[in-house]
Image 1: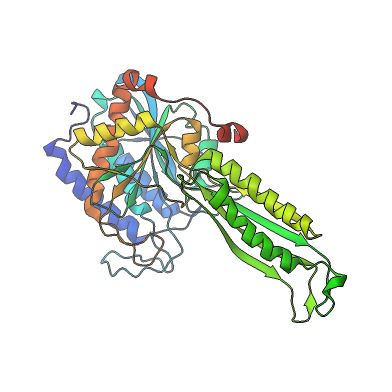
Image 2: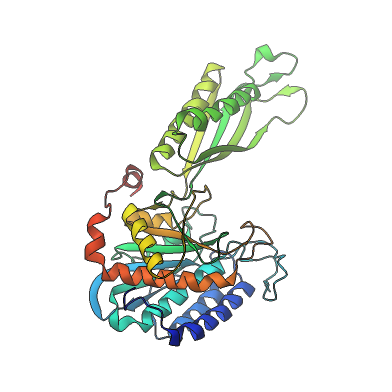
Length: 411
């Protein structure tokens, strides 16, 4: 354990108690994506009370702070997300949500508390800190992104205040051994893609189908064909799923309609699978329609890419956790979306899960992480950032700086 990262007995207990109070406040006051005004004000007050500088980012909600080390070194960033969910809480906690219909049902109250705690620890050690650590308290991770109002990570990146960052590190609570750090190199979360297709046939009387082209028959064939995308066209070793979630056609019992509609989502962890899934799905929809004498109009929407952890940073994270006396487990990939992926498209980094006990399923009214996991998360994230700056010259040559084909297409 280095002098830079060691947790001193004199400051650990008071800070841990302070952070638990902040956590309970955040949990009681969840706010929806893009509207985290009270949360942002609270975060600003906490950081400024510890002498931490807030950067002028122009963000309406959320903020970026900075801890400037006294010693030369690189610029890295740590991130916590801050928005809640439109869920009515049913946990029975004494600090349950006081905002009707809103809840921190994905643990962003936990995540921001970890990031704030890490920032405070780093500020206390700035005399021995190498380089600079930027602290991202990001809005709208859960928000429904549009071109006009992108997801929170994109909003923060678009401000330009992170243009000099050379590595990004983030944590997220997760059901598992309390306080353990789960790490996986490579694809960790799902790339979130949406597709829609309108099949154009020609209507007719239900008793005279020969006079038309039935789009419902085409739709049925398309539904069957699409299952081959994940079953036969993608590497079976990699997590992936294609789900059709909405179909619509016709309006009465005795008329064959002229159009049919379907939409759904594809989730993949590997960039090559993401491209292949789109190519094969579009081809199946269009060519199946053509085989039946119909046509298909297909739209594809690329959402957040997969979080892909750099192998060198993954190894480094395991070493840091071990040196801090924190348990390390192997993370498992999952196909939910996470917009931390946009940071890792800029430069390599590491995103880990902090075990939060028997928290239950996230995005449900009963989700309740164990607050005892916050302090191990704080210690890990602070140590990871501090040691990354201190040992940069050793770790940096091992890091993969190649831009993936997926990143190059969307850069």
